[in-house]
Image 1 (cartoon, protein in one colour):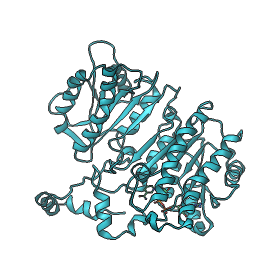
Image 2 (image 1 turned 90 degrees about the vertical axis):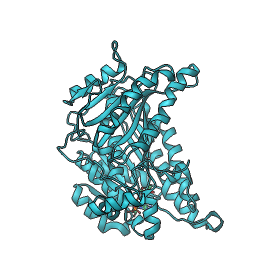
Image 3 (image 1 turned 120 degrees about the vertical axis):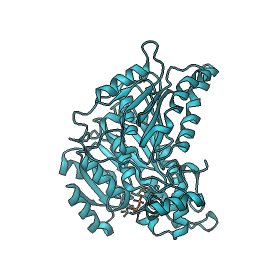
Image 4 (image 1 turned 135 degrees about the vertical axis):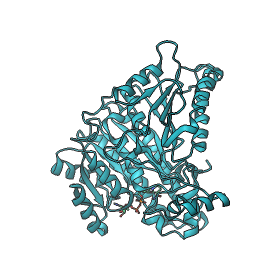
Length: 449
Ligand code: NAD
């Protein structure tokens, strides 16, 4: 969907006008293009350099990806990315050296550059100064994200427990954050554990040999997820209600998947999905719970039907399907569950008590499903999209839509593909160290929570 405002303020006259009137000036985002380099310039790795360090390990790994890696800021370079390794910092006073190193580069970042921090999780058993140093990174990254321009983003990776900076479990989210696939992810963190993760043999086809089901795949975000998973090599089962059968068949054709007309609220939905996947593709590895509905009303005007239908589709169906799959023997080879939540489920939204309760429910569900899958190297995660331009949002009144679309650090709506890229990452084998998490794909939406 074209962003007319963005195109206007990117033009000569529009640019001048927007500047004069103090209007938001969004930039075209650097999205993934097959064959394009991972980052749009050299990568600066900042961190301790007076002995073996986590920063060394990260720099070595990035060199292994054939990137132009530097360890010190120099003038005259348009940086494609800066990776700030703060995992060994033990007191807030130690941040300044590295953070001020980053400061010197901010005016010479390439368009669509990335800033990524790697830090360690603060826990209540840490000494207070250590916890302060570790948790301080949270405010740092979220503020940098709000200061960056030109479609650049800032995100962080948090090492939990025995996770190591140079391990593949850390490098996989680092690759995602550096790439164009994370274009609309801004001001966010992914926590990684010490799970054994192996990089896929072919980085362009990380889902080769895997079978995925996508619910609500006939249109919008679900159709984009289907196309992105197919691009990454997955074979697909595409689910939607019978009324959407024609659109579903089209997406199935495009992605060489199989269509399964099914209302996910059916009691036996889990069984039908698994039987279909096994009969047509021989296995099932990935479930993307994307189907969702809104029935907005202020709570004072909420009917039983509006409340119940949203809970039934958005959370109860997911719980029932997961229960079935978790109890079966056929979902045990490093399975992946990725559920669509929403920023409304994090911050709440006027008129959306039912929707927000269902989406916050999704967040609760993935957190407690994650440990149930750990024994089979499985993961469960949620994606919380912000304002994504779909048929649904196109129907909003122009002024409301325009305001809602600009209320984020990137000052624009996301696209279905932005959500799809995040889903594809979490579904991939090398995201094995990321589990029980909620990743917001919202351009750092100012959600107010
Ligand atoms: P959409 O309405 O365009 O598509 C949803 C699809 O789900 C439709 O094809 C619909 O037929 C299908 N579906 C609905 N009920 C179903 C059922 N009972 N069984 C099977 N299929 C069913 O929505 P979208 O904008 O693409 O959103 C996709 C997901 O992302 C939803 O979970 C939504 O809540 C979430 N989300 C969207 C946005 C956004 O800005 N668009 C923001 C946050 C979260």
